[in-house]
Structure formats: C-alpha cells, structure tokens
Amino acid sequence: MSPSPKLVFSGAATIDMIFSVDSLPTGPGKIMPKAMVLAAHGMATSAAIAARRLGGDVSLIARIGNDLMGDQFLREVMGEGVDCAFVRRFDGVATPLSAVVVDAAGERLVLPYYDKGLGADPSWIPEALVQGADAVQVDVRWPEGAERVLSLACEAGKIAVLDADVGPVDVIDRLAKLATHTVFSAPAALKVAERDSVVEALAVLTARYAGFIAITDGADGCYWQENGARCHLRPPRVDAIDTLAAGDVFHGAFTLAIAEGQSIREAIAFANVAAALKCKTFGGRLGSPHRDAVIAALAD
Image: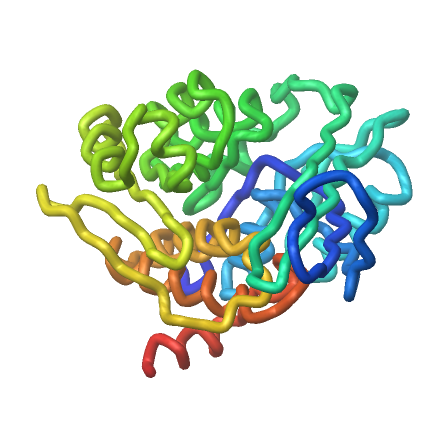
C-alpha cells in the first residue's frame, strides 16, 4: 500500500451555520449566540477533509448548487487539498444548508436542508475514479450514489466503508450488504438491529452482515467483534467544546488507517484519538486534527 492511499468519499456536502449557545432550546423564543461559524460540512465532506489532513490523497464525489454557497463550499474544500473535480453543480438548485446549535457541553442540534432538485441519478459517477482508489467511503444521505460507489469498489476488490448514521433502515440495510466495513453510530445501530443496547446490537449486526461491523458511541468509544470476541476501545478524555463532525472525523481517519494497512484495533485507536481531538475546537470539522497531533496523542 502506498504511503498516501488514494481515497474516494461520496455523499453529503453542506454549508453549516454553527451557533454556540449556553444551552439547547427547549421551546419557542429567541437565543443570542456567543459565537458563529460558517463552514463547509456534510458527513462525507467532513470525513474527506479529516482524511486529507491526516495524510490521505483524497477525492470527493458530491452534489451542490450552482450558487454562492456552492462557490464557498468549493473554495473551502479545495483549499484543504481535496480533489473536487467530481463535485457536481446543479443550476437553479440550492446548495444543502444546515443550521447547527452547539451548547456549552458540546452537544448539538442539527437542522439540515437538502434541495430535492439535486436529483438522485448516480450514473455520472466515474468508474475509473472509484476503482482506481485504495478505499472508498460513503454515507447514507445519497443512497443511489452510495450504492454505485460501493458496488464499483467491491467489483474491483477495494476497501468499501459505509458511514451508517441514522437514516431509513432499508437504505442502511441495502448498503451494509455491499460494504466491506460498516461503522454504525449507536442510534443507527439500535434502530437497525431493533435492540436496546449497543452490545446487543453489535451481536445482531455482526451476525447479519458479511463485512466488518463496528459501532461508535460517543465518549464511550467504539465496539466491534474480532475473532469471535467482543472488543471495546474508549477515546482519550478531553474537555469537549463541540462534538459536531466528531463521527465524520472518526470515519475519515478509520478509512485512511485501514487503507494504510493498519490493523482493526490500530485503526480504531487512531480514529478515536482524531475524533476526540476534534471535539476540543468549536466549529465542527474545523477542529479536525493533523497527523502529528494524533500520533503525539497516541504516544501519551
């Protein structure tokens, strides 16, 4: 495997307006934020930037509008060194936009908007780009695109990772059957497995799908099975300021580490640290760490 694996990420692309407040709203009224950041986000986008900062050679496949927000999205993501040649723009369509409220404990409330005019057709996704990668990662926000990318990657014998966050159960199920590695968020895992605990859900999902299965559960860390045994790794403790995009950073770091040839345990430890370090900075994926910071934290 090359020192800088070629990675392709496909899925959500948004501009997020992130507001810092003391506490999340509990009803109607007006809240005056302490701070605000406007930045390119989206599950696949944030994961792609995380992987790039950590040393990957990264391309992004996504859909945005041909508007001012789309211009800003491309400036930011390309400025991070991510190849955006296959970020497709649509006339007369709004670039996806999210309003995010982050409280003093780092927890968040997210209101995402995706214009239906973006369409679902994935036929324009280039076969050569996907099959020339060492690994791909998709999210569930564009199921048709995710299915094409996973299918093309599997046909070529490549690593195919699914970021299984909350979404329609039938969509997650269909995509998980294609992926070589699926990393569920805890809420998605409980919903898909129809269980009340992460440990129970892990057993169900590992038995159901042929690929590798892991479940991330915030500060409690990551659960997976290896050689028939249940495994668990917690991230390092940090003073969390903002958890937005922590899961995305985990996924990007995990995909990069697996593509580099790291073991499952090594990849999860690497991703745990990257996600934890991200939480120390307000602004979602803006806090995504560079590789030297992750390596230093792993050595502590």
